[in-house]
Image 1 (cartoon, one colour):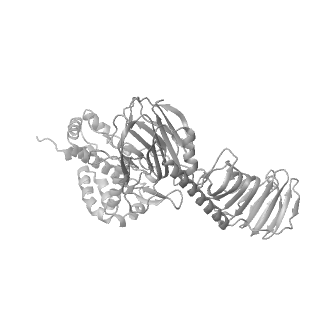
Image 2: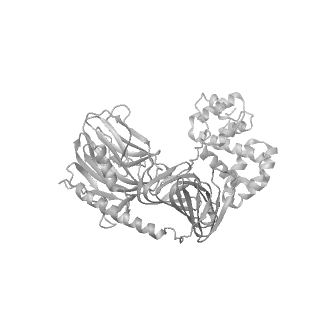
Length: 571
């Protein structure tokens, strides 16, 4: 008597009609042959899909919807469908399937592909038609079908507004903000002087002039504890409300100004449109006090008594005024950095100083600006010259896996400081390189972000856990903003310390390595291996870089802060 074939055994298995001896035989076949294991997986998935079709919960409408999209797949899969069906011998189900097959074959193809990709479908297969049963018969050698995938939790963001403009601000609160920062309910913005413009996600724009103290309540409401503010409220944001200790101002589509003097009065001026004034927020069901139209103004004291203001209503600060002030700030900030840059390049500790001030957008050479005799120019591979921290300044944009700057630094060093101005546009790689040496030999330095936005530094050859990472410094709300990062390996102390926007992050951590540091062949924004291996991990930086500093020595806190403050584009 001939031994049953794989197809015969599999057909019996799918029909739940296989005996123990044949089950052992099938398991051994699968365990010894990868191609049979693949067919086993396909057939199990197909059988599961057929069972789903026969179920009462599968409507004709669902399958019909996919018909037009899957005509081509239909012709290919119908033959396979019949082949499985013929083996199954389930005539009753066959009639159902034949009736539906021309319609659903394409949908099945898509379902199976999706199910395999997500690793979801096999988990639905129940009873004796389970992979573990066959695996046991094969002595545990049969690979388990894909397990249900763990669906990552979707990130959330509770912010309600962003800082659109910041001009000549002196902060007085514990928090200091930059252009592009997002703010959330319960945050308090305090400034001694200057102008801050907030843009709420529902469309309202609020300009705050210091000295002022503003608390964010929710997407439609703020509390002005003190100072002056002007609101522009488009139609989608109608109902935007400003609270003070004396009154509640509800916008009905307009432009208005508010001046709050704690313990004295609140003055409200309507530049355009209509607002309503109510009793203070301390009275949740307070009555409406006034309805103010264009050109009207009123003062409300602490007792809730209102007095019309007869002085001429002036227009709120225009966008043009803010733009002019911001343009002046940009010009002065860029000149300040240029003066510092000219002096800094004479620092004898400098190994590399790339300021990315390229004379044209086509050059493939990144000039080392350090005045030392060592000429350590970088070779730009890929990347695109673009705008840096200021409109006048250059930067390199790293996007593709090919983008990088290659350079070579000879010698060895006891301590090193690495610092860069970067704009992170995404953390979509497992590791995003800032500087990586080609190899990972004794003393070689690697500097990078991980996917959590943590900044890390390590030295090849260091024992035990080699990496020293910060807490997450960059999240989704901070993408696209210019930030300054720096890391120091202090060879004398055998420690690592990190800096973010001029401030030290976390504690100085021990990293035991008593050898000499080396760079050799290395890259900015990517990782190049010394020998071609056919493929390599993608670790290119996704973002821009417009200044990189490598110093022979361990800079101190004050020196890092000076680099940040002179280069801060929002100062």
